[in-house]
Length: 290
Ligand SMILES: [Zn+2]
View 1 (spheres, rainbow, N blue to C red):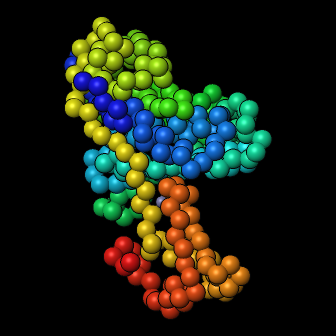
View 2 (tube, rainbow, N blue to C red):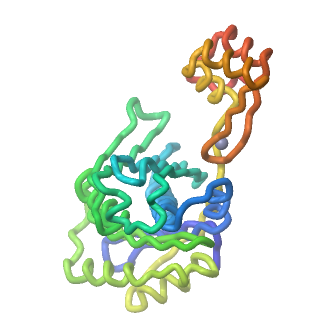
View 3 (cartoon, helix red, strand yellow):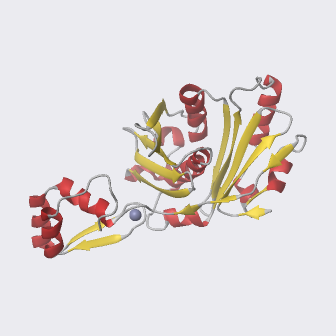
């Protein structure tokens, strides 16, 4: 069973280890469409997309996972989000010098935050780790070990066509995994290359990677690019910008244009719209107002 833009969960029948395999193709291409990312930045963004989908697929409630990288380094900011339904969006912003940098230089001094947000929870859960100079995967392995206390192996892969990865986690509350087996599974997971995912994620690929193990794989779940920007949220941004500044911009240019950094959608406000935005009372915490 081959599945593009999909996550396949699996368990090892004889070891207390579970995992997930992800392949993102049209999702990943759509994410890059309105941007001209230098190669090293695109690679981190692709790795982030795969990793965020792998974290979000494990949520047992309606929620959103947000992976953020920020710091003083050439990669100024990266944001990647996935809902538990695997609706993804993400973007990055980097200095012009990022074009031929190694990962370690790109993320100098940066930190990586993973936020899990749910309507059911009072407060979002956030874990923050320093970025490992080795890779985003190594940084997130540290996050899983320190913040979630779940030993994990993570392998991420990316080119301009597709991105993907594999996550292995020891199951909490079960007898500890034999160290040799855990190390062996990690080494096998790290053999995943972007070329292995060219045709999609598949049960066959899992059986090929873990050829000696009894792997039970579940039905693929579809992932897609979906931006959740709304007219209301953009109007909130204008309110934050302030009435005077917005009116001045509108007078100078005739309209105010706001482009969503995630999906590229352009929203135009003329003088009448701007007047409405600043006279209407915003309804906070609701998307029902359009
Ligand atoms: Zn958008």
